[in-house]
Length: 114
Length: 115
Image 1: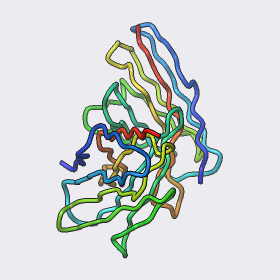
Image 2: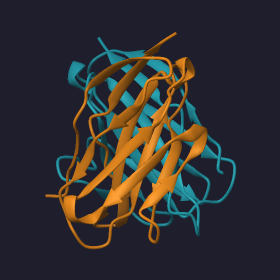
Image 3: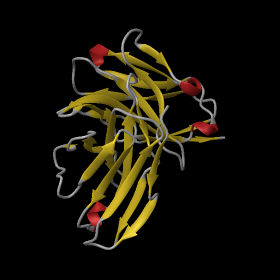
Image 4: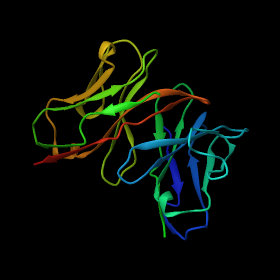
């Protein structure tokens, strides 16, 4: 199974600023995903990060707010822009390996916006 | 819209009690179904999965789940829980997205097991 590392594990940010979260996988993966888990809620898919092309966003999420990069088969970043307190959540990176149906998850980034 | 519903928000059991957590999904067609577990302070881990074949699937740590197509259900069971099963459990079918497929998650069930 792939091991996924996320950085930072937590951060406190001022409103109006941005936070970039890094996701590093220890092996090449086909698909990478970013999820948000708001307090008391389940995980919601933000976007699928495609290597070599723009990310594909789910309804309710836009590139201007959540720009994503995927420069290679083991790395992706999610930026949460123009932060507001409503962005306070846990953000999780996930990945799938070729030939395996299940996804693997990082430990998450806990973001608090003040 | 494709959705998933977990019936129990918080379950409290004593050790050795039996466990069943309900999960229903809203769509038909080909389904790939998963249960994930998140132990305190740890990341999400795969508990078990159903892809095809025998509708009764077995996972790690004595957990099993049964896929009942007619009921759109994928309930998780364990005959005898242990204190170490205290965790949050998520039912997660795969849905079709613009980019392919991805997991969608139920609201999760917090299981507390007392010794």
